[in-house]
Length: 195
Image 1 (cartoon, rainbow, N blue to C red):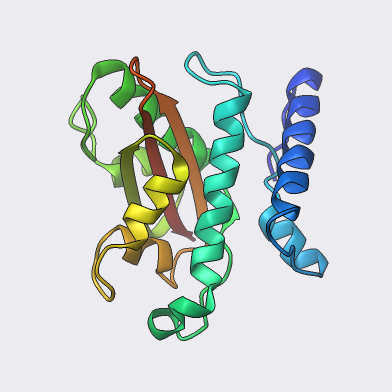
Image 2: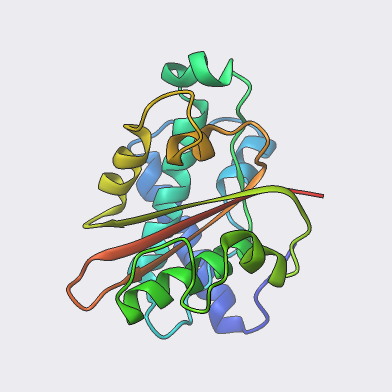
C-alpha cells in the first residue's frame, strides 16, 4: 500500500481520514470488522495539487463513501444480487481522476476524452495500473451529492454511470475533484478491476 513520504502530507492524510470518518459516523453506521473498516478508509488522500485543497479532499472521500453506500444498499439488490462489495480506494486511480478533473476545470471542457485525445483506459494504463476492466464517470455539478444522485437516477441495468457504480467486477476506485472558475465542481470517478 502506498504511504505518503513527507511527514506533513502523512499528518494531513491522517487528519482528513479521521475527520471524515468522524463526520460520516454521525450519519452512517460504520460496519464492524477490520475488513469493513479498511475498505472505508483510504491509505491517504493526496492534497498537494495546484487546484486542490483539504475541502476538495474531504469531498473526494465523501463521494467514495456514497459510491460504496450505493453499491451495498438494499435498494440496489435487484441489480447487484447483493454481491457488490465496497470498493477499495486506489491513490493511483485518484491521481488519474484528479488530473482529468483539473484539466477539464482549467481548460473549460467536459468530456471523457482528454484535451490530448486520451481516453480513460489509456490514462489508467499510463499510470501503471494493470487492469482487467476499467470505467469512468464524469460529472459537472454544484456538489458531490447532486452528482451522485444524477448518476444513480439513470436507468437501471444499463451501461451508464449507474452501471459503473454498481459493476460487480470493479474492486478499486479513485475520485478526483477540481473546482472551476465559477465554483462548479468537475468530478471524475475512475473504476478498475486490477490484475
